Each structure stands twice: as C-alpha cells, then as structure tokens.
Length: 145
Image 1 (cartoon, rainbow, N blue to C red):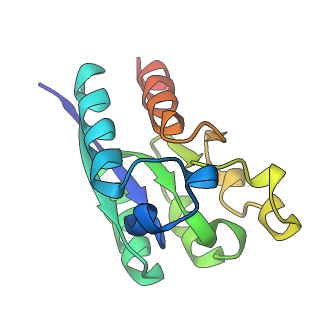
Image 2 (cartoon, rainbow, N blue to C red):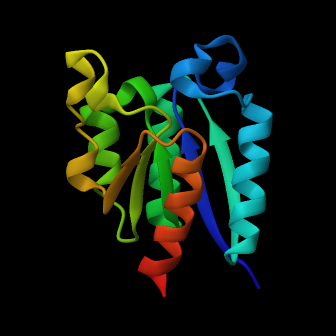
C-alpha cells in the first residue's frame, strides 16, 4: 500500500506554460503533475497534488495535512517570501515538510532571497527545475524510512 503525501503548489504554477521557460523549465503544469505522480509511485507514495492561487486554500490544506499527519512537499511560490499565515500553518505539521522551488530564488531578485517557510521546513530543494520535485520525493522517502 502506498503512503499518501500532499504535494502543494502555490500561485501561478498552474500557468507554467505561459511563464519564462528559462526560469521555470519546459513542462506545463499537467506534465509536471504527471512527473510528480509517477516518481511518487516509484518511491512508494500516493501523491495528492494540489495547486491554488489562494492563500486561505493553501492554509486549509496545510491544516488538513497536520490533522491527517501527512508529509508535505510544498512549492509556496510567491507566498514563500511574505506569508506568515502560511508559515504558521506549516509549523503545525508533525510530519516532514520539504520546500521546493523550480528556480533558484537566491540567484534571482533580492526580494526572493528570503523564505519565511524554510525555517519550518525539514529542508529546501531549489533550482533544479522539475527535478526539484524528484529530489524532494527521494529526500522524503529517506526521512520517513
């Protein structure tokens, strides 16, 4: 039986096909989701993949993960840099949370250099495009084993 995990994606990720491919890669959101789902299954996980542009929805999903004791792979996108409400919800988790980013925020604009999420995450994987999610799944498997 596969262990259920949540893979949460923040604002604008559903529109990857319209974003700068030199920063975010060539996959559209559907292809990214397929990569995550396949990789998750190969590592013993059943990934529930969700995306929202709405802060309140993401907070509710983090509450759900805390209540159900689900591990989370989380790309907070722009919420990374300023959403203390999302950070507080993420801090409620007793299971691992891995922060992921397609791009490397540290190589971009200065305002992207701060993550309010990383302080409550088990770790952060960034800058490897869609492979950031693959690496996060492998890391999560290691953490849970």
